[in-house]
Structure formats: C-alpha cells, structure tokens
Length: 294
Image (tube, one colour):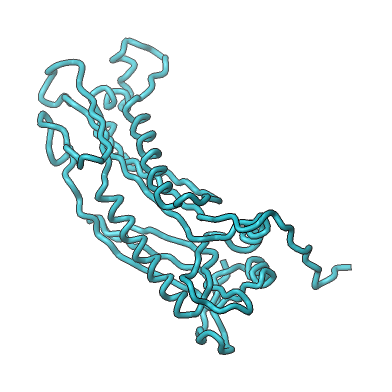
C-alpha cells in the first residue's frame, strides 16, 4: 500500500491530500469520478471485563451459568467418580463479554473515522483497513481503522459517508454490476471449550486406548459442536447488521487459542461489505490507454 501523508485542505479549496491507495487503485478511483480528499482514521483502546469461567469455579463444582440467551452446552462424565483430578463435567459456553467489548471498541474507532471523513466533506471511505491488536496480557486491545475518504465529482455531501473495504478495480466492478456500497460489516463470536474428560483424553492422544481402539479415527464431538456454535453466533450477528441487504467480498478468519488439556477458545471474525442493488448491470466504457508501448 502506498501512503502519502500531507496536509488536508477544507472541501472546495485546492491543495494537497493524503491517500492510502496504491497507484492502480488511485487511477481506478479517478476513472470512476471519485476524488480522494484525505486519509481518515479512527482509534480506540478497550479492556474487557472478564466474566466467570470454569477455571475460576474449579473442579467438582457446578458448571458456569451464562446469561439466559447465551449459548451453553454441558457434557457429563460417563465414568463416575474416578479421582479428585478427574473432570466430572465439560462445557462449551459463549463469552459474551468479549463480543461486547469487541463490538464497542470497533464501533467507537469506526465512528471516529467517519467523523474525520465528514469533516473533510467526503461522500465515502474506500479501501478500509482495520487492525485489532492486543496491547497487554490484561485483556487490553487497540482498534485502529483507516481508509481513503473520497468525494463524488460535482456533488455536494449531506449524508454520512458510506464505507467499503473495496478499492480500485474490485470497487469498479461492484458499481458496474449495479451494487452501491453502504458500509463495512464486521462481527466476532467467542466460544470457550472447557474440555470434558473424554475430550481431554482424545486431545492428549489417549482416546484410542480409552475406547479400546487402535488406529481408527475418533470425532471430537465437543470441539465440533463449539465450532458450529461459534459460526452460528457469527451468522446471527451479521444478519442483524444487514437489514435485508447483501454481503459481498466476505473474509472469515478463525482464531483459536489452546490452553492445554483440550481447553480451547474459538473466535471466528468476519469482515464484508454491505451493498444494495441500485441498477441493472451496466458495463463501463473501456478505458483508453494513455501510454502506448509500440
């Protein structure tokens, strides 16, 4: 990404500007009639307030009780009392406090980027890039969002700027297909796996011996269920943000943190572009070359 940082002049005045676009994306931006006016940025630093977990409750006591609408699934030991170190239960549960902290931090940084773009007189922000970075071991996370604010040539700006992860030819093809960008969509879900005794044995490589098997495969049902639940929670969050519109250019990243003994934290993160059809497909005029090589 090529970035040029210079002073941004108020709308309507000539002068330099900043841009986070590559040369190719910058050229495509101008060809679509979008004038870059500045690099808009937003920041936020958050600390999540951790809730109770089975690690805090301890062995031999009741499983963690989440909020009424949160996902939870319990797994019971089929062996009876084996020893004081034997896990009598396992549990998958939704870490809703992590999801709330993430949404609040991202939304705050996003709003600050929009406020900066609005002050520039922008119609939209293209080529958005977001980074979510942990800063310490105490649940502190930095949210940073930036993009190139643009104006549509010959039009005034009244509404809040639209946003998109797309830029260059990918954005041009979206307009060509008849879809207008509305805003970026992001979502996260967080599911904690507190392994049952069986899950622990299988994850530690002793599952075959436990089941009296040798080389046969064993499906780890608790982890399969946790991943499926995390994806379903993610879909629900995204659907609530679309309000009937479509989601294009989706990116899904699965983050997992293993604590040991089969215990996991599963956090899928989704990014995409909320778009709305405003016309039928209408091919753009083929660009004419400005430099001939023969």
